[in-house]
Image (tube, rainbow over all chains, first blue to last red; front, side, top):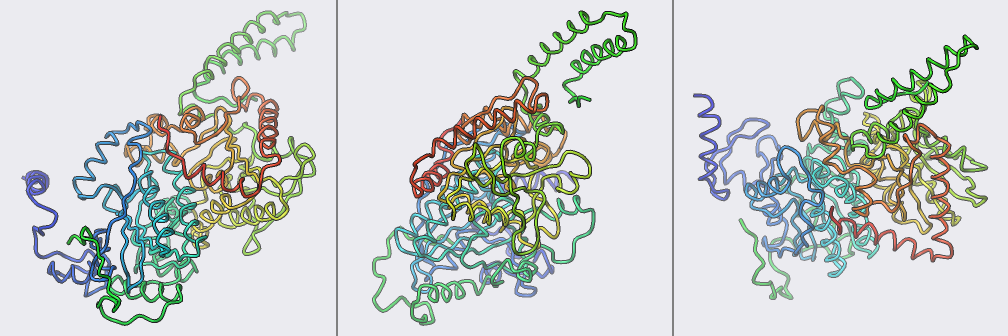
Length: 307
Length: 318
């Protein structure tokens, strides 16, 4: 009985359910247990109205919440060589990739888009933790390079939302090489005199934290995100003592000088708009979602914010 | 006393027998064992070169970590003159896991930096087993800035099982320190030559290895995660480290094919631990040759070439 309900039924459900259609209109906050209606949850950008717990949000929904009127254009990212090491573990790497593509309906672990944030043109790269734990491999490297190049081309700031378990082991040394590779990319943006803002989201760990996620002009984090190089379990094994409450969480890093600000997801758009205008020496923003008087009439047709 | 690895058991027996014979002969001068012992030596030598001709990736990992392998300090003492260590990150502390300072290589002033694991219990503890803390990476940044300012080439000797996973290290910004160190490697306008002499493990290594030229000893390893760590994550079983070592392509030979490294430095038969002097001398020759490639090269070009090299990583597959 138990394996029928625990295994077979979810398997059957997953075959028939579509990602866009919530199979259950109610979900429970993982932190405080409050029952949340799906509209309420998506309106709050997947943060809990009761306890402010920040849950997973897909990169597309994130982008939609950031750009003016929810309109953005994706920036194309060149595909790297698939499975460059012919990596063999219990499941072939191409199979893992295919599975991740199926469950997320995304191509890879990073999505790059351009659009306006508070009437400032910006390039935004969002790492997708639901895609193989957001792991940094050649594709993520290519995405950051593409984002940086586009930012320089447009003379626009680059904003990067990080979320990753670390490097993608299945790409071995080439995943490690993304640390210098992405560093070159973000330095191109900085050397062009453009802002590079990092927003660290839960969780950002390992080689990702130790490269582009810690090289921003400004470091913002969402509340209570785990941000670290070595994970808490590894440290507990090394030093054989219990770690303090809140260790390696956003607020702890803020206290230790590693972050500039901790910002609630629902305030992120305003925060970024204000910051960008300050850094670019632009006039303060007129509030509201109206397009600028000059009119951004040339919004490309393919600009889609998929719900 | 030779330190044998598990796959060297047969060798240990033969060498042990030869040693026993010679010990007997020392007690009894009448006995003539030399012929027999020499035959055993020959057999041992043949077995040794056989074993090391085609080491599996996991065996290479074992050799790379061999306690008798020459370490950073041995290379610095043997290859450089006037080594003048410089200490501290000017913020918090000095990190003894990383050595660094001014020195001369063939009379030419350079900045040399390298991770030192220590070679006995006391020095291993003092050096934190070659696992750097943020202050170590910040010292590296300082020394590279110094090299850049005075136009001195930088040589890094890489040998670490990774950056230190500790509470204080995290609180003081291990990630940020590593990121800045890698960034510094990419921004200096002097030649940066890195040699992986033992283990080049993960972010803790790349922060020193982002060089114009990266050379690697024949049996050294360079990888994003230790075979044990990879096995415990992907196989859910740390005992699968042999399979993980295989899958990670962490050998110098594979990394050369991937163009992640530029040069493989041959080790003496039986590995650097069998003949440290020969291994050190080979590294010295490689450093001299690689440095010479930068003579007369424009400072900006040195920097842009290095950046280009890393941007293009991953264009070649196995």
